Every structure is written in structure tokens, then in C-alpha cells.
Length: 184
Image 1 (cartoon, helix red, strand yellow):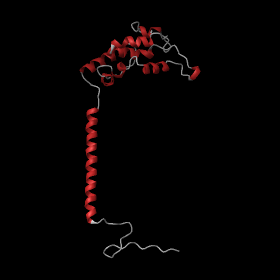
Image 2 (image 1 turned 90 degrees about the horizontal axis):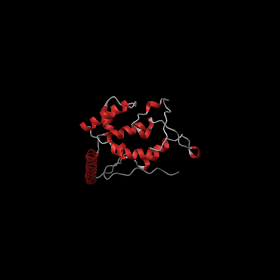
Image 3 (image 1 turned 45 degrees about the vertical axis):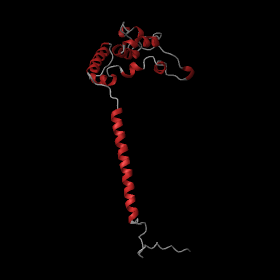
Image 4 (image 1 turned 45 degrees about the horizontal axis):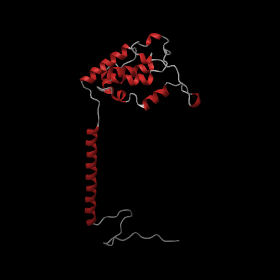
């Protein structure tokens, strides 16, 4: 059997309790200074990140033009028989004064591909095929484009003008307004 080694003796001749070791005073001061440098560096870094975050945060403008467009969109949606938020500020925050991402992505291949996939029967692989969709499916986007960026309607009509739509949700053929030729 081996004997346990005794704890090391301290310079003053006493024994240190196990686990407690004191740094010599000259090392303790440099240790505190290096900690201060690290803390200051971290504080400056966090402050820079916070300032950059506030500057870089791009918030949709809730200005008079955005509110006016939102009220117009709300009225257009309700007139078309579609649901709309009661508070136009919701629409103003979502679309701003320029239509936001809806107007930016019109005619993009990715957006068209996603909508094409959603206008399928839900099957995957060889069983996937197009369906006759209800005009309600595209009417909301059409009304947003009509309100915010009417110059982009041609691209929307080009992308979806050849689709067959029929009133399959309500069974009432009068649900599609005649001015929305692309979804009738």
C-alpha cells in the first residue's frame, strides 16, 4: 500500500488547506489588471454591437402615406369579400408605403415556383398535378399589387394568366370581380 503524500508546505512553514492556494501579491495585481482589460474589451464590443443593431434595424415606415395606402388596401380587400384586419396600422406595418416584399418579389422565379407548387393537388412525385383553383387564392395578392404597385400587375398576369380558375370554394360564380381578369 502506498502512503498518501502530505500536502505541500507553505513558505512560512505552515500547511495550506487542500484546494486553497494564494497567488503571490505580485501576480495578484497583474491578474486583476488583465481581468479589467478583458471586461473593458467585452463592454466596448457589446456597446458597438448594440449601436450597430439600432442603426441597422430597418423598420417599415408608419407614415401618413403608408397609413393612407393601408386604408385603401383594407377597403379593397373588404370590397372583394376578403378578410382584412380591423386596424389599418397592421397593414401599414406589413406593407409600408411601397408594398414591401409583395411588390419586390413579383415575377421572381422562386415566388412563382412556390405558388405553382401550392396550386397542385398536394400529392408528391408522379401523382402531382395541377388543379382548378378558386380565384380567391390569388385575389389577395392581386389586390395588394393593384393598391401598392400597379405597374407590376403585368408580370403577375403573365405568370398566372394561363391558369384555369373556377369557383370551387363557395360554389358561387359571382365571387370573382370582373375587373380581375387574371384570376377569372
